[in-house]
Image 1 (cartoon, rainbow, N blue to C red):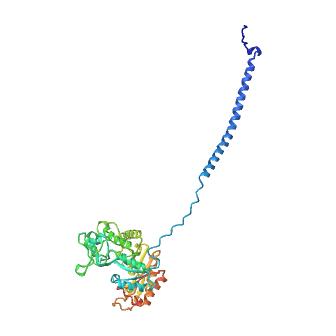
Image 2: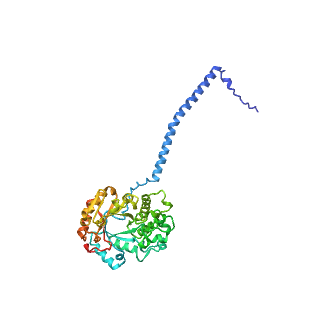
Length: 416
């Protein structure tokens, strides 16, 4: 058998021998080709990348938009209305005594009459000048002082009844003129010549009484607690009376303690008024400070440390009763002749004189509805015309709020 032979192929048999130059040229061409491909690929990659990135992002955004619908536009809420003030700008009030308040039959009859008049508020007493708390209080300090009056009325029920008749409850609170509380809480009272003995505004055998100390934190807290409790029971406004230092004899013997050092009388009263304003307003009420016409004219600045109108905050009640000026009155450039006989002229002159001092304040006037003392020569009984004359004079001076006042609660002029 013949042998199979493998044929060997040698490429070199068919190729000629290459020179070194051709090899170099070929390498250069290959390198150039690689560079061109790389360059084209690099430049093409960016747009392609951007295209697909944008397309993917758009697709993703479209898918998300289809999966999650856009939220509805937020509704614009109406601003909440401001709360109504506890007492309107035009107070038209009448004073009723504690005896009238405590008698249900008398009170109902009076309130029925008032609903047929322009009266929209009733003034009554919370704490009198003798220091008695006339309503039923749950305060510990009131129990400690023993100041709770016998037959005290139910303040919550009274305020509810008044509001049902569309009448605003205004409670009068005598502040630092209080002979009861210092007797039971000595640290709240004015002392005699830095001793532990209470100072009296007159000799003891002449009926001298102690006073609460306006510098005392305890005295202030006592008054403020009564005010805030009253508002929480329904009182709309606290009428603060006797926000002053004591009147009477022996002022040089009165000692006010270490808290008085470096603090003026007017500053002490201003701090107190700021405190009671803030706390009463927090309960939903407001405070008005009573200032007599004489005090408003500056006749009693010693008891306040300055003119009380400069100490009072936003709300003031000015006593414009002509009877306080007697048969006549003169103070520097202010003068009145026979003021009781001219109620309109008296109120007009007073309000014009103090106008710069009450600018920007909410003013209420306390008008006279009672006969003046019989010791006054130029005197007369006051009729409904005299009451209206005072109210009209106040209105002409921009004061539309008033309280008709008779100490005994008798108003035959207006059938009340």
